[in-house]
Each structure stands twice: as structure tokens, then as C-alpha cells.
Length: 295
Image (cartoon, rainbow, N blue to C red):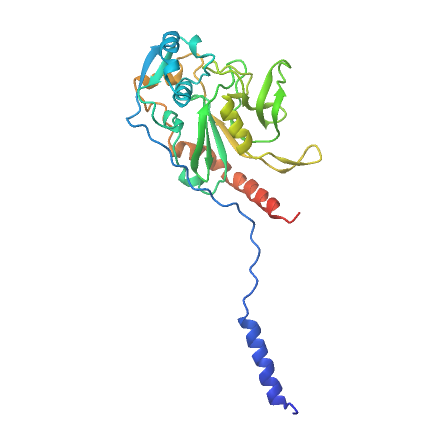
């Protein structure tokens, strides 16, 4: 059968309409990681409150009657490790040890304006403690002993860079640092496991209990370099903030009189991030886009 011009026109139009109705291929988006569910924290059975006890006496009479989880709460409350605990003059003891660690530190459980920030860590100088957040939710917290008066830890925004399960201190090659993660490469500042005597005692680094240092070591992101000094990807943002009263009482000793005196509001932490938020989000997007590229 011979096709007339009219029939050819009708067929061509039908093909064109069919092509228009075909689903178009979506533009590829960066591969964003799936957001984890917020952690569910166990609240203490009673309202948080504290009393004071002599360290040596408490250690001798009561330490061994506690579980390891309860012992860690005592360490967290006093910013001290168990080896150094008996050497303190006094301790603050929570009257209820049934809750999770986060309830014995002053960080908020949620930061609404950071819902789009995949990871960030805060170190509070006056509180001598840290908190890690994922998409605005507190996922981990613990004590820290930061820089002493002579060698203070510089405050501000950092990004994690290189890490090592074990390395030596730049101040003394006899000091072995476990689970080390640097945040300031040239100055050699980072967090790691080391003795916590219960006050700022380091040469500007951020000392942690070993299980806390191990968690952050595995959780935070390492930088990526091209060659030896060109940064392709930044690591996890870290904000160190506040000042420590070196010539006054330990701030946490005031918790006996007021259990909320050290509380840090969500607004305070969000205000610290606000000037850096776009830089943090840009670095985060760049990392996601890099990871999503076919290798």
C-alpha cells in the first residue's frame, strides 16, 4: 500500500506525541547518606542532683560497689579518669546513677538549626567536655582535659585532618598518644587518649578517656589530600569555645548547689555555628559529591 502525505503526517505526529509522553531521565543528584534515626537516651529515674564526698574515702569505700557504667558517670561528672580520681581533694557524686552519660553533661539533646549538618563536634573549655552531633541530634558526649593555663587550647572552628591509632607527642617523644585525631595540623593540636587529672593539664591538645577517643577516631571523617599539602576534602567540623577560670573553682564543683548552672542552650551552640554554617555545608556537599563519583 502506498502511503499518502496525509497518512505520513498523522503517523509522524503520533510518534512525536509518544516521545513527549515518555518519562524523562531525572538529573542525577549527589548521593547523600541516609540519615540515622535519633538515639534514644535513658533518663535517670530521679531529677539530676549532686553531693560532695572526699575522693580518697569514696574511692576506698564505694568505688568497687558500682558497675563500670556507674563508675564512668563519676569520671564524667568530675572530668577525671579512674587512676587519677583518688588524688582529687573532693568529688561531686550524682545522687542517681541510672541514666545515660549525656544527662550528666550540659549539652542539649537537639540543635534544630543544625538538622542539615551531618556531623559536628563541640569542645567546651569552661565545661571541659565535648559533644558530637549528627543532623542536629546528640549522639555522644564525654569529659575532656584541655590546654593548661601556660598552653591554652586555641578556640574557633577547625576541621579534622589526619589520624593515627598511635603516635608520639610533638612535645615529648616519650608520650604515647592513642586514637589521635588532629584538628590543627601545623600546631599539632588534636584529641587523643591520655591521663585526665580532673583539670586542664595538656599542652593545648584535647585529652579524652580511651573509649571516647576511640569512638571519635572511628566516627569523624579524615581529610583527603592531593599530594602532600593540597586539601581536596575537609574533615569533620570541630568548634572549640569558651574560657576556663584557671584562677577559680572548677566550674562543675558548683553543680552541688545548682545542678543546671553549667547548662548550655541549643541557641548558644547554634550561635557559635552560624558564622561558619555555609562553609561547613559547602565542605559537606563537596565530600558527598566526591564520594558519589564513580571510581
